Image (cartoon, rainbow, N blue to C red; front, top):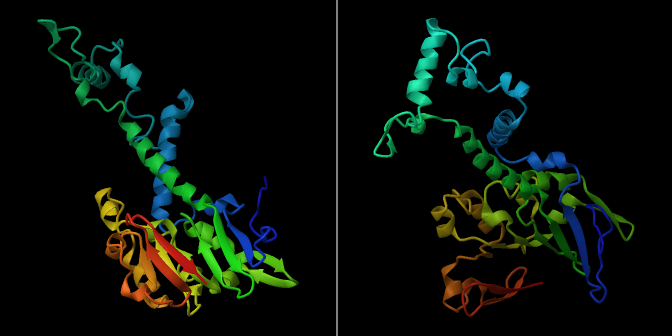
Length: 302
């Protein structure tokens, strides 16, 4: 077993003398994990964490709830408001009666035919803060994308590179910019590797924040460039993932690859016949053959 680091020596597997493997990600600087395309999403994650901290934290934290809508000196603590208290008149007494009769009543005091007749628990929002936990779970899941393993495979004789970026988001891509390797006495950098990419497995189903633009796709300038997009647009819409694959990325891919872009949901893959674009070797693609069940495609890259 080996633990590999970005910028560690490129691997040359035994028996595959014409292959080098570079580890680009995940970044070792965890600050890159939170760098995504939209800063507003990072703010939402922070708000969700704060909400849970306040709700699950000790009493002294809740007493100074920074997310509360009013200053601490206004209103009553919930336990106090729901208790009987000693005040017989004034605003505090009126508030206690309101909470007791309208929001705290569970019907236990008034039962008719075995059923509570004044159950007001449906009005209460005691567990409303739990809604933030779902948002937090989605945000934390999203952040793990930047911890994706990213590998670049280089043909030694030609210098051509195949890039597999998994679900890496913008932060992961940015971390490659300063990577350097010493190969046969020469320095190889992350951007220089990207400039030699001839086959790109498009990141995260083609979502808009999983392929960097100026520090990513626009560096892939090899004239024989080709790409594969593992996506299903219909399913993405059905589960409300938004525009996936993102049209702007698709357009740039098509332009840079001169049409040599394969999508997992291409109709021709289900017909068992090869699309006319791929019937002859073109660019980095020597051969393209769909599987019998339409669920995969065999690609030979040179």
